[in-house]
Length: 124
Image (cartoon, rainbow, N blue to C red; front, side):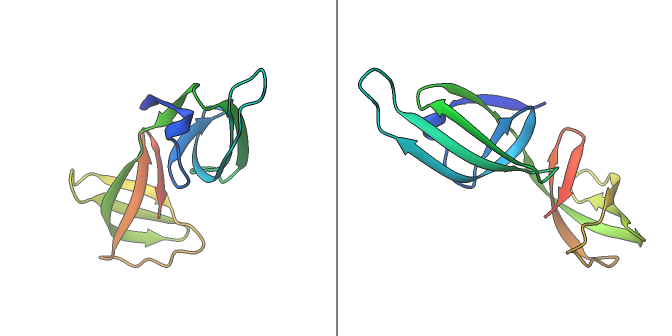
C-alpha cells in the first residue's frame, strides 16, 4: 500500500488516513486539551473510501500515523454491461473493468473521475 507518515495534528477534515489497514476519509476531527499528566488527544471519525465502513481513532496529537497516497484520475467510459463498466484511463490508455455505483448513471464516451490506490478503484 502506498503510504506516508504524518503527525495527527496535521490532519484535517476531508483528508485521508489509514485506520485498521483501510484507507478512510476523515469526516470529523476534534481535539481535547492536555490534562494534568497527559498530552492533548485527537479523535478522528472516518469512513472507508473503498468499503464505506465507519471507523474511529483516538491518538495523541504528536503521534505519527499512516496516510494513504490516493490518486485522482480521469477516464472515459468505453462500454457499460449491466453493473460493470469498462473505463479507459486518459493518461495511460489502459482499459479497466470497474463496478458501477448505484448512484452513477454513465454512458459510453462519457468522461468520469475515479480514485485509485494500488489495485483498488472507485468512481467518484
